Image (tube, rainbow over all chains, first blue to last red; front, side, top):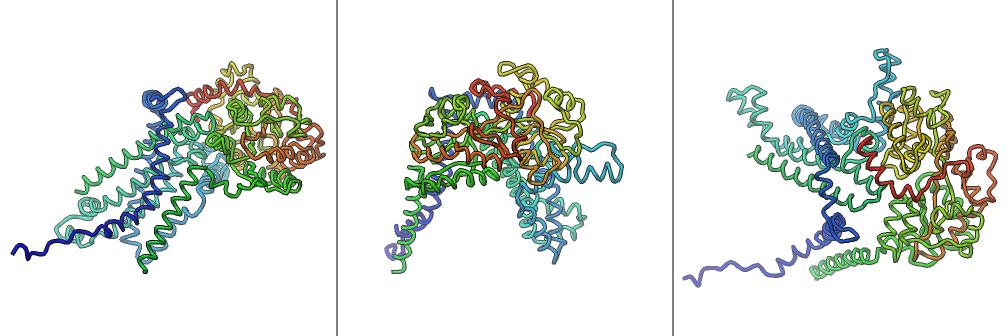
Length: 285
Length: 354
């Protein structure tokens, strides 16, 4: 009898080879353009003419100045992410639930700024908020509200605002995609069971959309973490790791230090990615 | 049959891709494929009007005389030097345009060839001091002066000296735009020049840092030359530390509200050196000879509004009043500055932070 039972056919080696073969270009690409440069960068961060050293990492992780820079980098990225959630969620909610036939137009308006060069957008902020720019001219000369112009550009605040301006679309689109997939009958059920609109949102809609917030937060955090042009042009007193890496390359030519800084930036990005994923999954569970 | 064709295609694609990337990695040859012939060289230029001037004044006569082709690679000295350092046996560029401190780094690392009159006849027309300043492994062919640029519409009585500049900015009379520490020549054009003007020097930059502390509430920082112009044109700043040539370029482009003063203490000379990497195409010497040619330099000066170094050059009436003879500038001790530059940068980061 047992001899009559059909045995599962073992996969033919040719069928296993095909997916591996198809994955080969991507694997080669990643090895050549990601793994190998990363390894090279890591080696550069510990090698000196006399051998190897971890002194660069010790300096970066114990010197109060460099710790401050790492702190500013993380705080800036976290702040921009938080503001983007606060601004982006209502926009995404309106887009999915209220905009109706205007949804396409709103998406276009959201994406439109991304079609222009980041340098032009940043210069736009300068034109608007310069000491003798449009806003100050209006406040001082036209309306007479102020006696002297405000120092609005070249400050951390304006740099954060400019970053949020650039990054909010990523947050909105991430959240909107998830909101779109939430079954509205769940919200209706909550209301039928006596929940008011706020409680329905807080206990049904928000938890179900956490995946979207998580995705958006990861995207925004990562991009803000490595942002450069906006901070160079508008950053005021902000000192972040990308600016310091550029300085090590361009001014001091200390490539070892630049490599160590970039490895730390990478670790921060990966750690935050991991932490955000854990947080979102736990909340969403 | 169909399966075989698909496999062949996939296999071929993978092999082609792997071959390209491996070849590129092993030889660094991808960007140089077009350069493989000995009649092609790769020369360097900054972007914008620089590129235009390089093509018109140097590339065109070089190509006409040698029938060779000069490809122009755009970028900046730190990038080009890093490229040569990464592949000194087969440098990806044949001619380097460098800031003097990086030219010294290249010279001391033995990455560049000696300049001699037998290889470059026009070198005989360049003052010896300018060739010696980069240890004879290159020479300065063009220079700008770092001085005070201002908006005439808003500043009717501009500061005439660095000392006056510091006092009036500190008092809040103006908002000034100065180069940030991320700009490669800030240690020379700002830190050293202002320290020297205020009684210090390479060994003592305390006067500079004290001046910056006094001015800090009325300063903005530019990250690149165009950024400075944006500051002045948008009203973010009224005056600043900038280059004479770029100032006059903006003026000629229609910004007639802009003006420049060479400070009484003498603005710093910011030279541009030309060098040939070792193992680069020998034709590079012919190109460098064109760079040092009096007629070509005259044309270059007319376009760029910068001083040039061939002693036979006669400036046109238009730009003559704009050019400060290099002997009347503060000539930076590039070699000494290179030794303390990183200390200055670190101090700037900790005390000024922008």
